[in-house]
Length: 320
Image (cartoon, one colour):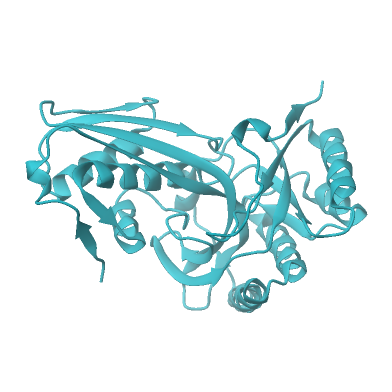
């Protein structure tokens, strides 16, 4: 049962108010597939990139305006929330994101979660993750970025399966194979899994849950690579073999894929001896492979010390 905590007498009494909120993204998925019970699932890889939503509630207007204008899903969410909570009027929503669209970094889900939180702040309610799930369920399939940490998530049903915990610090050297994958359309495509494949995914999910619980990032990296290979029949990556070779050459943890996107990443343990040298060699090899490289960092556990770079410090390069 979801709980909504009212912060004031009632939304209908609100005048012009403002709300601002963020939501992090995820670098593809550590694991994605289908289980013997018939459900599809994914396991998130939270990263230190965010979408930010700012919402101004205007009781004197009837429409909701959003910038950028193509963020129509977020506009639909605002309209649904105002109706759900009995708020008269409209408003203005501004979205700003570090997450590129159509690459598999949960940009759309992060936009929606940030929007829900910002609107909630503006109208005087605090939304817990299950209520955000309920709000998003009528919009599109979603990643589990409304939940802290690594979670197993039923993206088609938009509900959490289990909270797995937090990974030790990991760096992801990412590449983009180009183009975009539209999440809603991709999820509408039929995906047939055999009974044997479903059993394999169940075993991998149990193993990954144990790896996250114990901080075994080597095991998590191996499972990520296995999942990327199994996903080749659904959303193939032309550079996956080369990325796995790069990972092996630098003694990385594994290769992570955006299962419904265009991104691939080499996972590196931050506490591994010689991390900076390994990172530099990985970036150079990935640049030679695709020309476009960026660096992401796993999102630390809330309250943990972090020296993560600000947005402008994220490395990104394109070779000629």
